[in-house]
Structure formats: structure tokens, C-alpha cells
Image 1: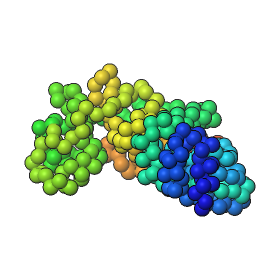
Image 2 (image 1 turned 180 degrees about the horizontal axis):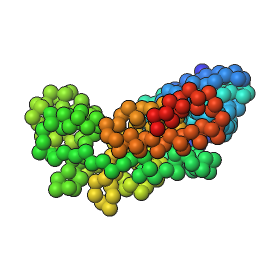
Image 3 (image 1 turned 90 degrees about the vertical axis):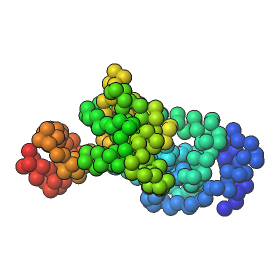
Image 4 (image 1 turned 90 degrees about the horizontal axis):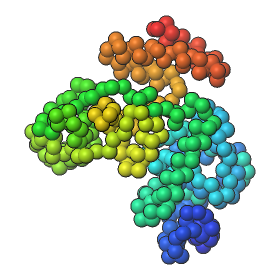
Length: 316
């Protein structure tokens, strides 16, 4: 790869055109180049930034709907890099060309080093969300937070031990806890905190939650849009976000909840059924079966309806 060609290209491509010649040279050597043939499906599952150098590429949704076409100077992969969520899109080369790849670690380094670059990709991601909203009336990005999380306060006090917290998380089958004091949210504790701040630091199981929790966490109101939660989690690189109602603890939304919300597939409903431990929970799942059948019917998924939905309807 001729680094000089990459530098020349980046110098005329927003937002890299704002970098100095020295910064461009340092950035250009981090890119790799890939030649794409017509009809080839490009691997976009990895966390890396793609920039189209030449050629035309068709972007399809997981339901084979054409979303857009990428041409010279267009980007892809920033949504996965910013949120950690894979859209399961498919990118197909329609005209031979070249793409540049920037590894995730260097992308994040640039974001933290150059604020304007970070703002550019945040805004690009926001525009992408609005495009989805216009294309899909019932898109996951038009959902409210309250559409995918129920009122469920699994909480603990800061004085409890980390061992008690781990036991509560196991019993309730959750990956995080709300830490409250007199019904006021003061922090959160996640399974990652238990690994990195307790086990990795060889702390005693009797250590209080207060010593390892994340204090004064970011929160979101239950009536906010789901894409606002995605943006907030992306901006602060967090995977658990407390949900509030009128300033009080309401529930917790996780990256897994968001991934599950974007999947209109029976497999995810089956998983939800197996996760339920109460009759009320099963009833909530059963209410989704008819709407799922209608959705798949509109998509003419005949084999899927016979093979998977029939057993679900029988359960219903």
C-alpha cells in the first residue's frame, strides 16, 4: 500500500482533512487496503472503520432490504464502533474497487485525541438513526425505553458486601444492580465491576459495595427514545444504564436489551420464554406471538412460520 496515496485521499476526506500533515501521516500508516471484486460480500462483522476509496457497494439490512449504496468517501462500521451493537447488515460490492480499513483501537484513539473527529462520527450515527426512522415506521429506533424494559428494581445498599451483591445478581439472573440509599439511586454495580475491581484486585468478599460501585451513574428517563439510550451508552462507553421515572429508580437497560429489541425473530422470543420464572412473565411473552406472526407473514416467511411459529402458537 502506498502511504502517500492514503494521505492524499484522507486530506480530501472529511473529517480527516482537518488534521495537520504530520497527523495525517501518523494516521495513514494505520490503514490497510483491500481490493473488492464485483459480487463479493464484504466482511463487516469486525469492529473497524471502513472508508470507500473506489467502487460501489450495496448495503442491505438483515431482511435483505436495500438501505443505501456506498461510494467514494463513504463510511461504514462507525455504528458498531460507537455502540458495540452489530446491525447484521450485509455489504456487497457492485463495482470493483478498493476500501480502506482502520482498526478499532486506532479509531478510538483518534476519537479521544481529536474532538472534532469524534463529533463528526457521532453526528453521522445520528443521521443514520433518523434514516432508519424514515425507512421503517416500526423501526427499533422509534421505540421508547419503556417499550423494551419493564419496571424492575433489583437493588442493593452500599453497605452490603460484594459477596451478597454477587449472590443477589445470581438469584435474580441479572448482570447489574442498582445501588440505592433511602430509595435514592447513588450508584450501580455490574458483573464487570466484580471481575475488574474485586477479583482482579484480590479484594475480600466482605468488602462493601460502596468501595467498588460506579457512583453517580448516568441515567435515562423511561419515556426517552431508545436511540437516545444507545447514544448515551456509546458516548460514555457503558453497557448498563439506569432507567428512571420522575427522578426515581425504575429499571435498568443493558446493551443486551437493545440487541434483543432489534431482532424481529422467533429465536429471540423463544429465548425470552425460557428466561421467564413467573406466569406474568410468560403472559407478556405470549402477547408478542400474534404480532410476530403478522410481521413474518408480511415478509412472506412461510417456512419460518410453519417450523417455529406453529409450536409457539400451540404453547399460546
